[in-house]
Length: 162
Length: 162
Image (cartoon, each protein chain N blue to C red):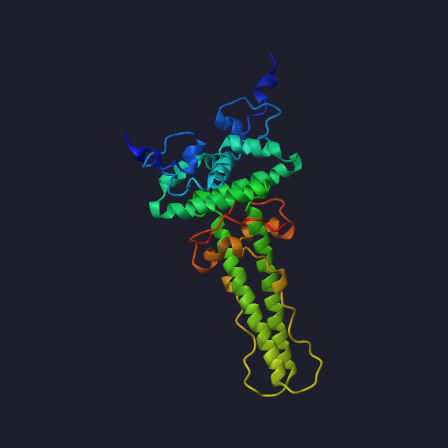
């Protein structure tokens, strides 16, 4: 009789939930530790265990942790907001970008106007570079989302631009 | 013999894909028309038909179109970028917000400095309101995502703030 048999590694959260033996080759084990059961149940509820397993097996091992975390983030967002999920966050951020860009343009215009109103000849640099060119544009995907709340979300362009 | 039997409504894209009879009560039919088969296969591949069906049945009918479109957007993003999906877009937008905010702060500082450097007494208004207070903060969810690319995505806060 070996006393170590009582100290075997506990199954990962996924295998425990799915009531299956957690083998050393388990694709879930490194990312769903037993002490974080909710992480797996959340992902499972939204994406399904088999879809997650398939996805993890299709990407490189060094990318899996990021993939699991982004899936968990999306899943949690979907459970909190079943209608928009984390797409709602994209919409909010897009509006924030537009507002900031508008504010920046107006501030630059103030600066230019102020400079023009003064006839002194000091060498103060006015008018910062405009950052429009670097604007991350999701408008093709969210044309209506930006102008009219979350209605009519487009699905034709969700390229992360990376 | 009725000649109209050849003109019955075709099954929706979901029922056609799942090879089942498309009943008038089909929850997919209004959102997955037969002429858009890819919309359903994309959503099915990422979320699974039964999860989508369950989600649609749990929300109000008037919210279902938005839900399907946001699911389709998320699914398409996940197929294009299996590691980050549309969470990558959130990360990019967050960085864009931070950059714009920094740019706006610097421009406001320029404006203030310019005003202080001039001793004339005109009544020009300088220093636009700062928009920091309205900043949509995902930092608790994306602390590391913002500063170090997409690594170590947190999952503890994905509230859309709505």
